[in-house]
Amino acid sequence: MLRKEFLFIFFLSFLFYAYSQDKIQIITNNSDKYSEILPLENLQFENFSLEILLFDDNLLTNNFAGSINYLENNYEKAPVLTIYIDPVNSEPKIYGINKKNLPGMDFTKIIVKTLNIEEEFAREFPFMISTIIPKNSLTQLYNSYNRDIALIQGKTGYYTFKDILDKINTVQNSDKLYFVFNIMNRVVYMNERYIIYVFATSILIIMLFLVIISKPVNFHLKENFKFLPAIPFKTMQVFINAFISTLVISYIVDYSQNNQIIYQSPLFFLIIKILIILFIYGISFHIVKDSAFSNSPYFYMLFSFYSSFILFLILSIIYLPLGLIQLWPIFCTILFISIKNIKVKNLLFLLSPILHLYIFYQNFLYSDFSIISLFINSKYLGNILISVILMPFILLHESLHRFIGRKRKKHKNSIDILVSLLTLTVTITLIAIVLEINKM
Image (tube, rainbow, N blue to C red; front, side):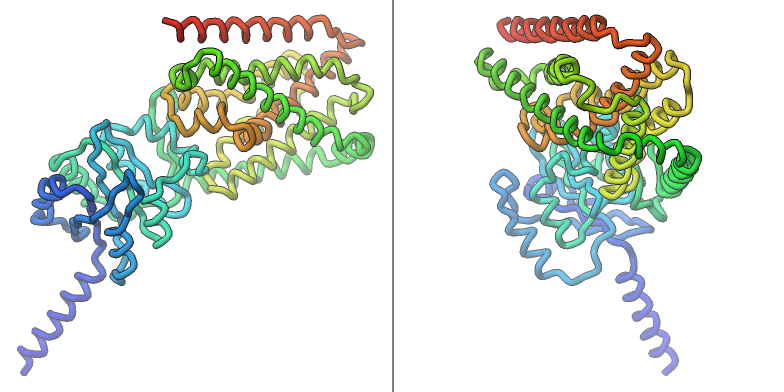
């Protein structure tokens, strides 16, 4: 009798262990790939069980019949990770990274390192998380069922996945909140604990700064309250400039008779677009008289800080670690406000956009079509994003311009006009270079 009870308890314990053990799924839509990786199920793993499935899906036509049937009729505990293999004839690329259903940091790290796509992944991570890069339809389907999925499109093999699974088997717990970035070709992973430390410290410093400058802020806001409409006006002005630059680039594409010219020289076109925006803004800066707006450098300086802080909060709401990108311009602006030396203010103004420039440079250099299309071709959404990103720096420039004008006792417009004309010359030269390269 005791033996039967013991066997029954053992059987229940085994079932409980089998159910509670984490499961990793590998899914493919290709029968040859399925046959190749099926022997992986015979391997023994301590920390998870493995399931390999073949679904009747066609990603080219967005026909996910096999996945839909499985997701709608399967009520088991969700796998800790689903790896979907679409074996197209290209270098591996990973999809499915988004703020809602993010595979654990250690899982992601192992997959991208083993596939040798870590640097590319780190460059694109901020855009993936902010959903600026559109989500793949298949990953959207799995995310709607709260499944963490890594869609791998490209050439992979049995030994690649054996290596991935062997490394994943050592993972105990994996952070779900993390950030990945690329600094000087070195990939850095920041986990949840450090993100919260940095975020909390930054908020504390910003709040202390606001308390310290509260009296001067109140004074300058009262003195310049009637000029508040200048902020939305200037934002709209930047958007219109960006819109015009998009039309100019469309004309260049039509003139070249090559629809792919933007994707062949994306960095050139990003520089051209920014230069056109700055040239139009520089000229209009002198056409619209300063008397229409506040002449106080403190007014623009403070609103540069506020706009940076609001952008920081928006990015943090989208995905907490994403807000970290905006901390650099915020601290540059804080120092700009605190330091009186004009030369140091100049230096801080030049340094403030450097992190944003680096991120865009990395992504445009390696030609991610989704980002290029958004920021260069898009007439509305892309230009709205450009306007929002540029506003803190433009307001900081407005402040610096007025500080320099005070030092000189009057505005020396000749230097600024010369800079605007130089900007136009560089822009035209770049356009000529791009068109000449296109003819070759």
